[in-house]
Length: 219
Ligand code: GRF
Image (tube, rainbow, N blue to C red):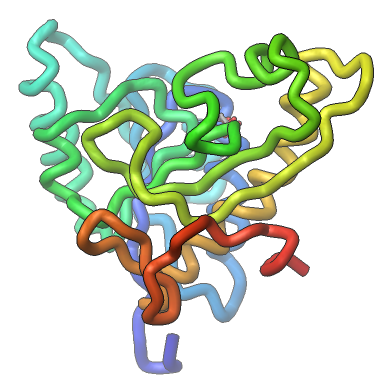
C-alpha cells in the first residue's frame, strides 16, 4: 500500500466467538495494514459481535427468517455489498454459501478451515483426525467457491498430533496457528499479490500448485 492509497475494506462473517475475527481486526490496526475491517455480520447473536463493537466496528445480525436459502443469501449479499468490501472473510461462519452469495463476490471470498484440505472438509475435523490416528493436522485458508471447503487453497499451517491429545487440546493448537495465518492471506489479497482466477489461487504472478506453508512465510 502506498502512502496515498486508502486501505481496502474487508467484511467479516462470523457465527461464534470470533477469535479469528479478532486476530484479523488486530492485524488491521498495524500502521502499514493494506486493509481495514469495515463491518462484521453474523447469522445469529454471535459472541464475536461484541468484540467487534469494542473495536468500534459496525455489526449486524442477519438471521435466516425463511427456508428459502437463495433468498437469504441474496439478502446477505446485499447487506455485505452495502459495505463495499474488496474482500469477504468468512471466520467461523456456520452456513454453507452457494451461488447467490458466491457469485456476487466471485474470487473475493476467503475462508479458514481447521484441517489440511482437501482432507476433512466439513465439520468435526479435530475429532476425525484423532479417530484416524493421523500424525499431522492443521488449518487451511482458501478461496470460497460453490463447493464446500473445496476452493483454491492459499496457505496452510501444520501441527503435530501428540499422543493422548484430546479434541480440545488439538483444536487449541490448530487455532493458535490460525490466528497467525489468516491475516497474511488477507494482506496479500489487499496488496494485489494474491488473486483467484480460472479456479486457481495466484501468488506473486504464479498459480499455486500447492498451498503456501505458514512455516515458510511466518516469522
Ligand atoms: C475456526 O476453527 C475456523 O477454522 C473455523 O471455525 C472456527 C472459528 O473459530 N472455520 P473462531 O470463531 O474464529 O474462534
